[in-house]
Amino acid sequence: MDKIKVGVSGYGVIGLRLATGVELQEDMELVGISDVAPTLAIRGLVESGRPYNFYNAMPENEEKLKEAGVKISGTLEDLVKKCDVILDASPGGIGAENKKLYERLNTKAIFQGGEKDEVAEAFFHGYANYSKGVDKDYLKLTSCNTTGLIRAVDCLDKAVGVDRVALTIIRRVADPGDYHRGLTNALQMDRAPNHQAVDLMSIMPHIDATGLLVHTPVTHGHIITVLASTKKKINKEETIEILGKHPRIRTVKIDDGFLGNASLFRYARDMGKLRGDLYEIALWEDSIVNSGNDIMFAINIPQESVVIPENMDAVRAAMGIKSGAEATSLTNKYLGMK
Image (cartoon, rainbow, N blue to C red; front, side, top):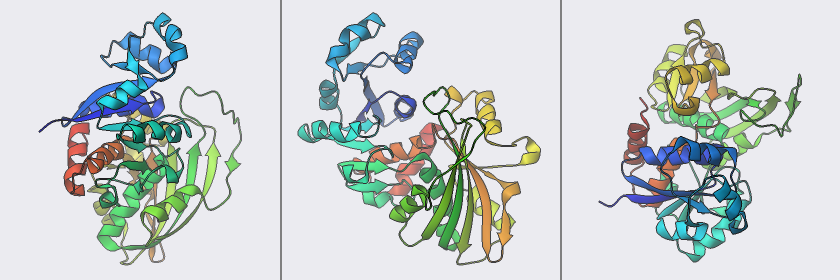
């Protein structure tokens, strides 16, 4: 069977991780990556010697790219012509413009959470609504927080049923290395309900969801507290058993040194994970409590890498793999998850 030919448009925080993710999939071939300028990520790619074919999405920057040592294999259009699917990780709004090219060349595309919903035929999650993406030309992924949140809620829902969720997102303000957001010694409230709760209901319309979001001056991961109203009452031990079986959820304990988001980032680096990336969300066992008939818990979202598995799922769905169980298990296997 021929490998699925995949290109990555936009080599930033998500795009560089998508390229790594595709490289690890034994049924996919990374044709190349595309960007517009010799950014730090592109300069790092050149110095690392990784054998990616680079396609220039902004011809007027060709000399700048060459001066930075970037070998140019062609234009973005050249890349799209060679691919079955493009993983578009361009900044919000650029992907929608790129779609015109994808449509003209009859190439499928997967868009990230920063694009508007109307860019795609379906809002996609690998576990919660895989069938919605099968054979579609254009899919849109959920944001990092929504992706991890849905993993946990969908897992509970399949096991015991979920009627409602109320959540609070303690949101990192920027990615490591970003300078464009400058909260210092301050927390900032968003209006309720946050978009993650609304997006969860788009993917899982049978669940009533609402929530709050607080921006915090940190960079290594979000923390979400979830209060879930389940159809069958469950205790702490049952919650650990249910969520602990999910291949994209780690269970951790404070006594083992997992004090917060920074502990998980450090742990990933100490394990030798490239860039300190974790593909799994983490559930603190110590956070699980019953509130009446409801269950409450806290999860950590590694925002730079958590959406990579669902992107791989989306490629397989778009290319016609009908079984969500087969598609997600392949992703989990090739990404080295439990």
